[in-house]
Length: 72
Image 1 (tube, one colour):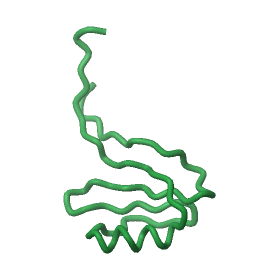
Image 2 (cartoon, one colour):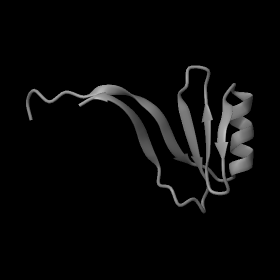
Image 3 (spheres, one colour):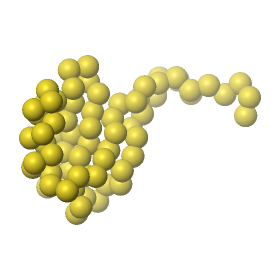
Image 4 (cartoon, helix red, strand yellow):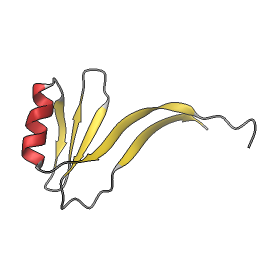
């Protein structure tokens, strides 16, 4: 489709991890803060608001890219 434009940013990446607790701690060492933590996933964000959703093996969530859409 010509003329179709998307405006937005990548809000977060959701990635698999082997151990949720250990992965959260490693991201904290890199300067990320914990926004949310549940049994089957966690969200950490950097100082600019970019997020990494961590998905352990038992997570109900699939790996994905989260977009913050401004216009479409």
